Image 1 (cartoon, rainbow, N blue to C red):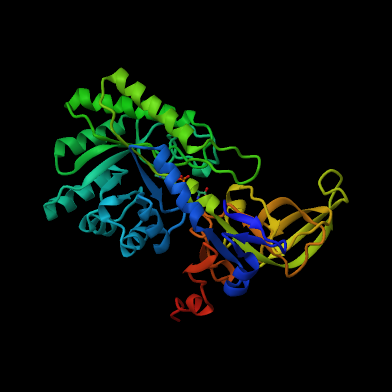
Image 2 (image 1 turned 90 degrees about the vertical axis):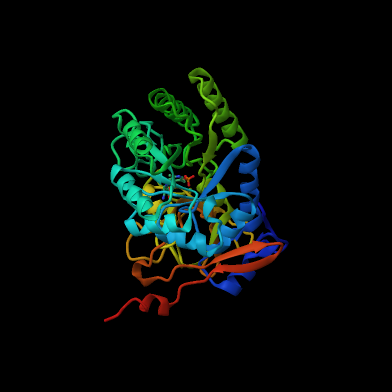
Length: 435
Ligand code: LLP
């Protein structure tokens, strides 16, 4: 996070508050949110993407306090399940500022979204169009929809988080003609209000050319719809997926640069196709919340293991540094091979660097938080370790594996900490057992 620095005693402090105090008050592990950091990223996106609606993708991390923060900063909100919608509504997010995603929304979810009056529903299948059309007819309403288009871009990211190539579950294929057919069906039936097209090519993307290709392709479809039906769709959503730096190896483009490139492509393409430039929107999740959070753990054990020539640190050892969380609070390393960094947070050390692997407390050896990191050789039980960049898809993908309670989220601002999601308790875990 942006507002993190070493205090006089060598401990890390966030917005002026020492991690020692945070650990003492809230325990570990704990997700620490630098609130001003999150808010500043919201503002940067809004400033860079002027005239573009910025939908925060709630799947990255959602709780009521964060909904209020992003709403106060002028963002819209993208949800993709009834559960996310419930959090948004209960936080007071104006429904017309919510977009509802999902490739298999249930009838109940759709009904709830329609009844709440969400601003737009991004339809993903013919079955969903039929379901939503029936609901709208019953209620005599005209929900606003976008059609999710699979543009055939191979985003260069992990296979599981790339979404616009053809051989996966999301959206209507552009090449196969399904996207045009979906738009025609909605227009011809006249029950739903087709506002525009949507494309999301994947996540943790650094190469802006994927967005450019995708924008060109959806605008091509936009022109095709105009030619066939005489309708110019007023909106276009280019999705999220803007990459962030997890380690010093990553070098993401600032939002202004992305915004400029996208604008240029969209305007050029609209010019070429003689289309009015539609109202644009984007859906960043990770880029808003990812860098604003670090996870604070306490070290429980340190084990030195000799490693083969070339594989280990200078002294031929690797330290397995076990912390009090693990794959239940951050599955990304195990699931995607994601890279993180770690640092000893409660003190400064001048000890030699030692090749370390930060591991959790779960019963499997794949329970790795940070695969390779140099930590001071005197790292020891009782030390606090901070892992930055854990705001996105860590708490939101957390599990209770091994009946480990999920950690709390603490927002820090102006030297003060505020609990925004409490720690799960043993009672919470036992509450679901009915036998
Ligand atoms: N819009 C749509 C339609 C999406 O499916 C997603 C992410 C986003 C926006 C936000 O993408 P972002 O800006 O956060 O990259 N669990 C994976 C990421 C899955 C992303 C799913 N969809 C991870 O931990 O990397």
